[in-house]
Length: 81
Image (cartoon, rainbow, N blue to C red; front, side):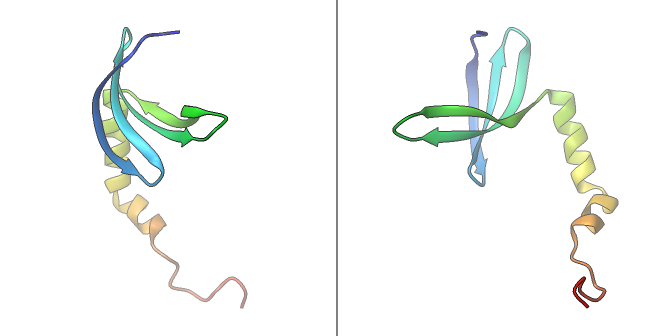
């Protein structure tokens, strides 16, 4: 198992803690589910790890007009009509 160090803990996104971690492969932004249960406590495999360049690409995509438009609710009639 690769040993890693937590460089920073950022504000969570919903139920997913956000951390900057570093290991022998470099630094990455890690957004991962954390469970605190009797049978298991710790980070799960449910999440994503992004390298620095991927973080910039994700932010650019999320800030794009087409992405913002896709997130807006439809102004047309409902699907049930």
